[in-house]
Length: 312
Image (cartoon, rainbow, N blue to C red; front, side, top):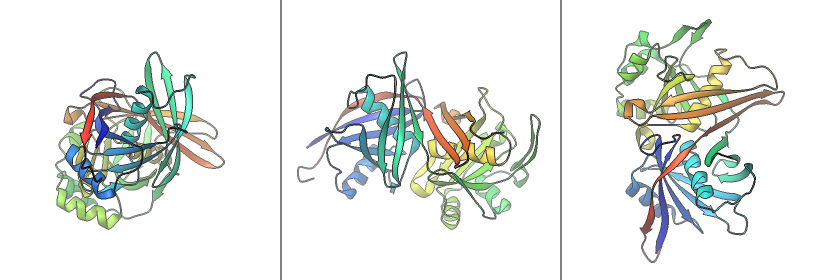
């Protein structure tokens, strides 16, 4: 049995940049153990399996696997999945802007496709954002990250005067958001993966999403993401975590947002892995609360087929 597979660089406009994801298109989901083995074989941070209904191609089901476990949602793999579906003709729409539905283990999410000048941008709705109240041990955290405790936290930046401290935020998956004072400090992070696995389990988070307001390309922030608990030492672009970071910045008043206003934030990531990435975050505030969307572009790097056992 052969299944189509794609190797896609997400959150980039150039191959060999962004965050690579595996994309496997199926008529029916395979056995969970087999999908896990395929994800391990591809050995990318995430592999997404897409179940396409030929009768209704604008509603698709997705499941996401790291090399070691299944996760409920993944931003960069979602981007890769829908880029493939549009680019390869599985989803055909004449309009330049349209919506499709994604069924995940977290429920149904809306995905917006924008086609402009021969390119495709995928914008993904995130789950209801939240900040989780949890006391963070700064000394322990600094040891896990291989930096000094005083390197953590931001109190001033371009007119902002407040206190950005580590905290847990989520737009679908919980991440420990860690503000750092400079790009130099961000660059020298050396994670103790075993200690981070333990701490992540204690806090109920996927991992650490560290950031600084110093940037290389004039974006809102430069970020790095570490999630060894789910088999990811470091990720070059993280959609859900940057969505959570956008909400964190708004709630901590670094970014001002009024009712019914939508703002766009941009995050750069992956440069210290030589895989430059850019992630767009769109935030709208209304009487119902905050709506977070994350978007970007992608490129197919490799496409082919994978051979599976006949009895699968």
